[in-house]
Every structure is written in structure tokens, then in C-alpha cells.
Length: 356
Image 1 (cartoon, helix red, strand yellow):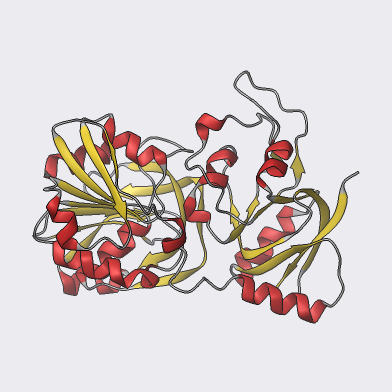
Image 2: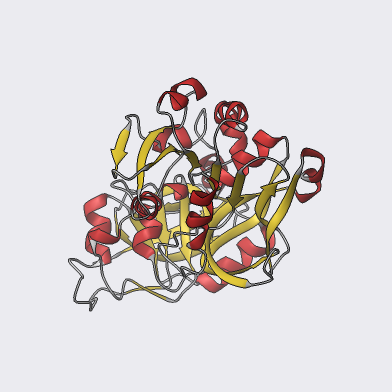
């Protein structure tokens, strides 16, 4: 028998549902994702560390779980909230149901929730802390617990999710050092299949150590949280700007902007989903992109550091990519490797290789 559960937001908003997976509950920053498919990648993307993810699509789990789709070995998100969770999936590659997977991983899912109403709250009030609990004992205490749940750990989430060892993959002629701020497997795969030797290093690796690998290029990966929690990495990138071509993706895009001297800011509810339109300001083409971020680059700060906008979001006008007048760097706020989502912009990996 499924247990009744509740999502309590830090502003006191309350949503009732049924708990699946872990019965211990969870707490974190509550965000929403508008993707129709891709819940396997969402659960395994380190960029969701510390978050409870609300899936706005009304039916989740209908194609089950295929471990080959996972973007990391660890499930970093704190919990899921869905309208309806399919208990009897149907797909030839499925190895288990989503509820079985959640139980195996010790993750909690609150289902039978009015996710439409919940998303409206988050869209209007902004993302905020929340807790999934089996009972409502003391609402004031739960609201305070929800508020604290959204606070990042000391040093930020990146140092929790980054690899602590150097990894080598591929054996192509182009050597790329990838700074792991919470990298997805698909980014590494996109580089390897283009003939790169990829050397993945921890997020706090210094510039001298990176240059010892004699890289032809440097990739700054995606990752969770506020880029200003990673000022150690900003200093590293700043010291490498004139030494090696650089590609920044998602959090890496924000870190590159900070290294150039630009600014970032927290968005009200961010971009999370597989259907975000962006315009390439050089070609005029519009691409549909996969995104997952709660921070953005401040456009007004770019011109004074010699940078300019290369891609723009067509929903809200925010910066989706940048280039520099003189330096061989490029970055995008979206995910060119998709996983999940459209692969319209995978060519950007080729653009990066052309800089090397």
C-alpha cells in the first residue's frame, strides 16, 4: 500500500500526494522540468544535485528504466514529483519500472500531485526550498526545514559531484582536458566520437596541472549550483584564457563569463526542459535545445570585457551563448549533446575542434 505524503514549500504552500520509493522523505530546492521524455537522464544528471524535480509532463515512467541511458553512476537529485507514475512500463529496452528503480536507489517520488498548480507557484514565486514528508506535525518547523533544504553545502555542490581522479577516454589526435563540474557522460562521448583523447580532471585542478597534459583544448562542463561557488575554477580558467581554446557548457558557460570579467545572476525559475528555442545570431537560424540551469550571464556586463552574445533565448531574451572579440573561446548555456532532447546544436563540438 502506498503511503500518503506531502510536499511543503518554504512559503507554506502544501501539495498532497502518494509516496513511492524511499519512505524517508527528502528536502531540496524545488524546480520544474518541462521535458516530455528523459526522466532517466534527469535523475542521473549531476546538475540536479540538491534539487527536487517536478516533471510537468503528466505521465512519467511509461518506458521504464534502461541503465544505458544514465548520465552518471550516482543519482544526485533529492526527489521527484509527478502527476502520474506508470507502474507497468512497456519498452523493449526497459529492465525495470521507475518505482522499482527509485526504491533500489533510495529516492523518493511524490505522485498523484497537481503538478500544474505546483508549477504555477514556482513560475510566479520562483524556485524555493521544499521538503517531501510522510506527515504534517509542525508546519512552522517544516517551512524552516524547507528553507534550509535549498541552501548549498559549504563550498557548493560541485565539489560533491566532481570526480576525484583523472580519467582518460579515447585515443584520437586531439587532446582535450575536461574540467568536471558534474559532467554528463554524453559530453565525453560527443568528444570521443569526434576523435578526441579526453582527459577528465577534478573541478579544483589548477592551471599548471592542466597544462602539464599539453591539451589542444579545454572543456568546462555542466554542473550544479551557483557559479560563484566555484571561484577557484574561475581563477584557473582566467589563467588559461590565452593559453588554450576553451568550450564552456551550461555551468561552464557561466564560469567562462566570470573568468572574462562578466557577471552572472540567479533566475527566478530557470530553464529546465528539452524544448527551449534559441537563435544563432550569426546565421539567424533557430534551434530547439535541451537546458538545465538556474543562473544566467548578465548581458550588460559583456561588452566591457570584449565578449558578445552568440545565441539568444527566444522565450525570454536571455544570453544563451557567448564569443570573444580576440580569444579562441566559445560557450553555450544549453546542452549541445542533448541527452535528453534535440541534437540541433551538436555541431558546436565541431566548431570547438576547429578552434584547436
